Image (cartoon, rainbow, N blue to C red):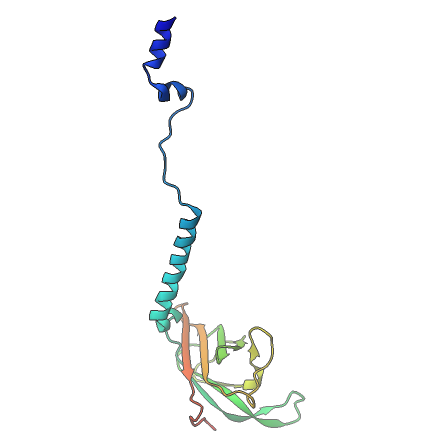
Length: 174
């Protein structure tokens, strides 16, 4: 009987204990700390690319021109017109621009449902732009328009973005 015990012992203790289950090679595992650090590194690298190339992240330029001014706009009752601060957007391309979005000062937004026609300006009262977070309207008497960002769909299907900056003392279109 001791000969049989010696035979099993000659295989070694590791093989004797694991004879019923196959051996699996150890694999590398990512710890919780390693996972968090790798996710933070991904976010930081994305923000670094955005900080280095902010204009290229937005997309190709949209062929539009933007001007600020004062024009008569029909009142809500339809009984007359009132001289109102406006944003004037003109399509400079040969095709209409669908999915048009306008943004004042990075905070006040307007989604234009109909495509922007070729060569024709659209006149939008500044008071119709609403805050992204609170739905409050832009008050041109209280705030200056510093920048207007226009986005829309290009004929290629890509999203075009153009940003126009206006200085406080800059003459505006009348």
